[in-house]
Length: 307
Image (cartoon, rainbow, N blue to C red; front, side):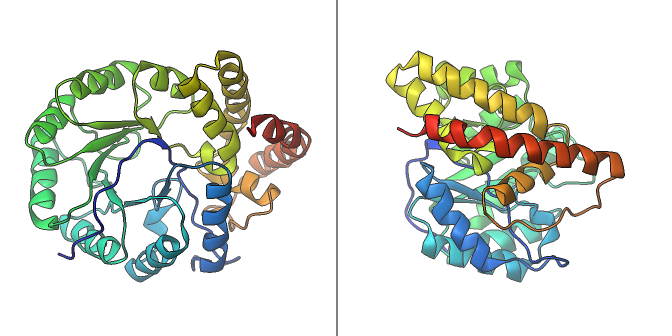
């Protein structure tokens, strides 16, 4: 396996980036992706997460994923975390090799998806991956049980204890599990990111290292403004930005992921591409309603969020 760049400190807001694609196809739009890197960095992002669930990684072949990472890493002014999740161990290792050769600053990996595996097999998968990846960048676990197999808290503890994984993104939206991860931080050098919009402010105040959020792709100014306000003790501004984030999220959760985020990106002048699956007429009507609302809502919101 190729070796990546030297390890970086991972903390702050890492928007989960969409992967723009050309209209009518699933060919990645690399030019639009480069513009997105600038958009997110200008919005205050501390880093960017590529090819996660919001990036619809499973729709793109190995070569498109490799080229996307290569180009975005060259363009980005902030660290890049690359999701290398695949349905097989061999596929995950190949994606990791590609990402490392392109200069990824960290790798993120969910358990194999579609088929169900027990906790022992998930742990063995992670151990074998770490043993064969041969990389010198942080490895992050990706806990998103609503889409794939989960990662038991005991598994996280053993992998952290053995120094095989340096962090985790928790998108379970389970406060008990998240508190368990924060407790592990007291014993092991484990970076903990929250992937839950609704729990984001509470997670940061409780000691999370950062956020990897889909909504931060569409509203980086709001999420980054909230995080920095919490960090500096500006409770009033933090509360205001968190309220705005919830207002947006109340709409986004009414659509299949990540359709609402992609539409918001288009309304902000960023290219995204059509949904992977056609929207039902009622959902499309709701999307039209959302578009009207967003156009009226976001200008003042983003202006208030800026420093």
